[in-house]
Length: 330
Image (cartoon, rainbow, N blue to C red; front, top):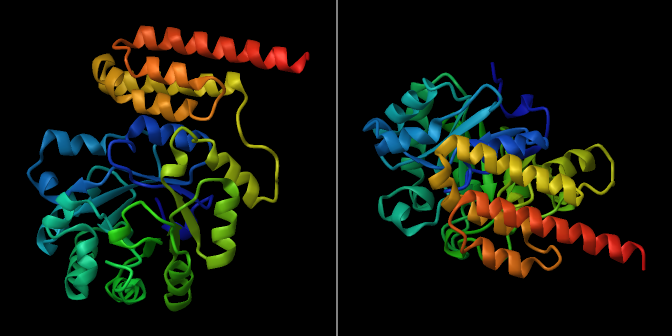
């Protein structure tokens, strides 16, 4: 049985990302050392209505653990009922989203706007804690705006309400995903609460994770956009945490193998037709920054069937191997 954040075997967690953190993506991240992964953010209202599309987010397997399910909503009773349903699906942890800045979520009274209402924050956490026996965490931002930084206050409320850990994104809601994450708020929260604190924001390389751990004393780091097309960042963080400074990046053959493996899992998960559409963004992320990738990336975005995409991928990586081989002999 999962005993909570303090029992994790590593310090690198995969963030819940809408349209990305599905089962195949989580399994790829885990294969490189991700210690804990989360589902995409799930609507509490959708859960209690037992919407097939909503419950699809909870699909998992034996290798997908420990698994956290992130839920969002504004009504304590609905959140509690949803958490109970989710817990019965076998997840190891419930995370309450109180940091999402997306307008649709904000308008429903959920996500980051909850940071304006500490009393409701407390009532939601208490209700969810009462309804489940598994750990409950809360994900917040540093504040609603840069003139209203109140993450420390909300962290205190979360702790007093029974939260088992708190995840802190060092940006305000009005920053969205722009600007720079301010890790100082993570450090401040770590000083003020007695529950585990997970830092989030601007982890692009393993060295960033180490720096966050050192500068904030947080218990673990959560990687979001830094893992897109770069799941081996988890391997790099594991190595860096053990004092190894070796290059963690894969060679061309290893990168191509990961892409194909991810593609095959995606097609098995949602079918070839949907995978053809859904996987294009991953192809762009996986090949970003590689030599002569512009043509491949443009072409991959236009191809409509998986076989053509994979054939083009094979041709592209063959050309990269030839290019690098030529460079090594000159």
